Image 1 (spheres, rainbow, N blue to C red):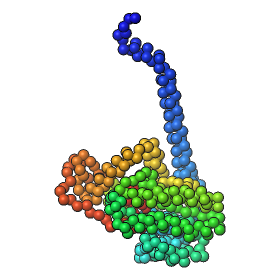
Image 2 (cartoon, helix red, strand yellow):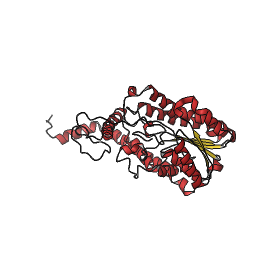
Image 3 (tube, rainbow, N blue to C red):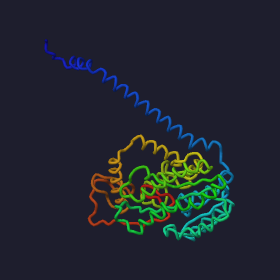
Image 4 (cartoon, one colour):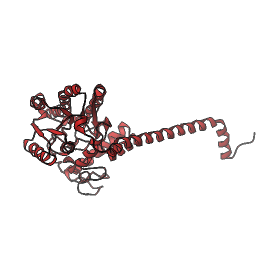
Length: 374
């Protein structure tokens, strides 16, 4: 038998023996391409149905659909205050709950005068646990509560290990981020069930979508809210009650001022008013949504990238280092950039002895998220 001295001839001979492998790979490629196309079409359909179609049909009568009164927790700033204003613009009366009496009364007065609705205020501190609720229960008596917005939350803006939290901070995460939503829902649901209508919005966070090291307690509490909302919806949807898990990405609020990038309003980082204006239109349409269509685009992109847990953890560690440098207003370690912080250049060492300036543990934020919304 003559020796084969042609590589191309050799590969053709081998290819004849394994042609079925090529065909199998072609089938797998076609299947994967079809799956991607179907996913993109499905996501596009959902994007249009949730974020654009409701806006075509104008503003619904929320008082008639759900009830005459809305309750908003953490309603003195950020997303909470914007929710109060937006619901008031629909003609819904408000019960606003906060621990800061002066800010609460000022916000309630401004909304009442602007939108010509009735407002009521409740001053209480959710971090106190069971002590916070008797005064709320009394304020809700005799009122037709149609909408509940569970927005109150706590967040430490600087990434840190779980054991660095104090015992009181751990209890704040439990009492405020988890306990408040449970107890408020427990207070308003009986009346909603009796009237067979109502809506509850639980403000979760981008951080509920993946494990979030260095924000362990916070991200876990937001994951709880997401699952709590979805389970509750299955329980009560048949009784005319709509429960929504709202998953905002970055919104330009108090805590994002730590970053020069996130503190500036943009297409993907809206103001609280702009964000809520979109989010309210999804009420009754989607039980789990980002609330803002550019954020939904980011969600679709993130799902397409499908980072593994290890890759996600590495990304969070990189952000954590850069974010800490931004807080301290120092140059990041060699070869790394940071989010915001005044435009210092990469590649320079951290000044020796530079201390990180920590903010106090932030309570009653209007829009908790991955790197800090109040």
